[in-house]
Length: 159
Image (cartoon, rainbow, N blue to C red; front, side, top):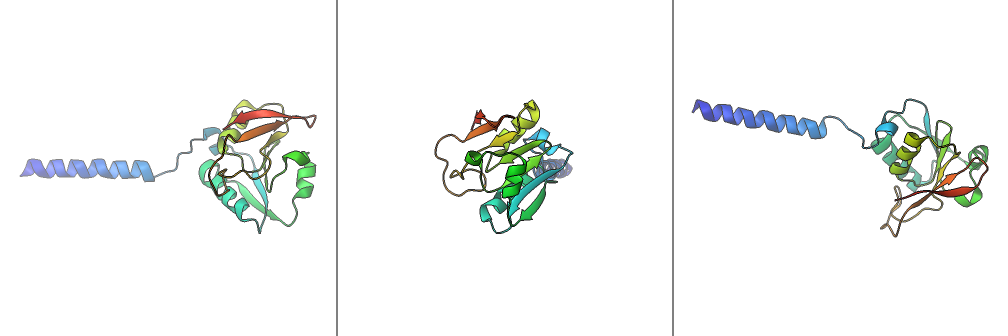
């Protein structure tokens, strides 16, 4: 009988450790973004539902310390960071000297922070279906563009 108790206790300990490992702490797949210590600001309209969903995604999966800044008009911010009109979307994230424009998956933000290219930022214009914060199914690749210092754009990556 004593052997069965020890086996039962052993199984309980293993289960408790497994539950803690899976639920005890969030480990982001985006290590550089998760460990980023400088300011991260997500600028959005308070009334924009998709911006709210994207902000939650960014904080939950990327960096919980990101500040959400609600503004009535963010067009001045897009001008300040020289976001080309053709690349504009509904919200802008500022992280370090970079801007991240639109519903960009965090894989692209992680790549930006790891590689640190000499650009102004990255953008995914429009509001593609199935992108983070947007309803619907993904239709084709998400094309993320680099915005160069001279204002030109080129493909940064596809997801």
